[in-house]
Length: 342
Image (cartoon, rainbow, N blue to C red; front, side, top):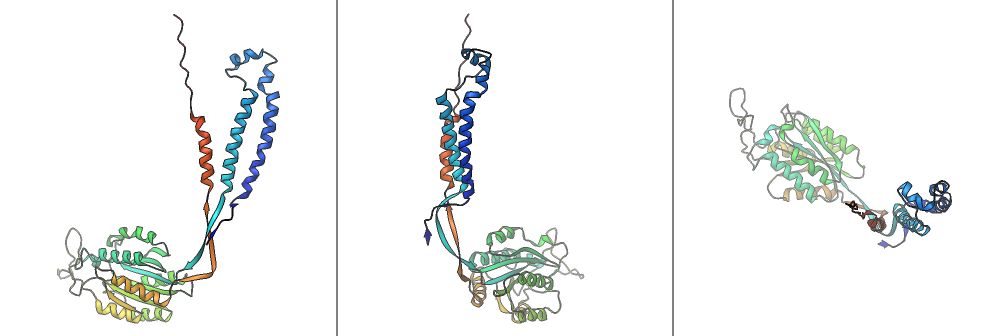
């Protein structure tokens, strides 16, 4: 609904209009008792322009300048007061679900059994999740041997999207894939959200975690109404893990380290956490399924008793008018010097 009620956002600025009267009185008094009036005691009026380098303005010219100043003062004062005369009534919405994404950035995510690599596919999955998101506030944690909070839970998807390109396996020096610390950090992020919202965790990983007791930890989180969903990245056949200098990682026996997708372990983790498991693919159906599962528990709710007014500010019309009044003052008249008589 649109409201057409005219008012000023900052009406106290209108008090500045009262300054016009004392300025007018000062101008009237200074005309009679000004500098030029005192100089007339020491020189004839027709000699004053030659002595001072300027001439005294006539009464009409002085009041013309005053009128221009008054017009500018009124326009700028009204602009500062913030005129408004139409507004939209907008109903407020609150996200009905919170989600923390745990993104695996361990070295095994560089395996290229999915193109172009597991980590690139994982970033794409997060991007798909953000672009399709409706009514979900999302946070992001990147983890390997330790967990890093990349973004708190927010409704600003662009803030997370701006960080995605910088997330890579090179962010961690000590390699490993430890999930327990990331789950604890996700729990802390969710603890600060409204209790009536559903709370969810999405793990994007190839599995093979080094932690013990992950299933018990997942069951405990599920008992606290925190559901764990899992998106597997990779293939059961796996591939060699890239190392440094273009070589592959090797074990103590000199054999190339292979990293298959631990699909059974990830499925068990999702089941213990009361969520769903999906294997990531190049389509966006996987993220759509996860979003539907999350929003099915708690759709975005409209706050029926809370609305806000969004006013259309109109001060710029007055600023434009003031700028047009100032244009003539930018003109400069140039006088060519007279040549000397030869």
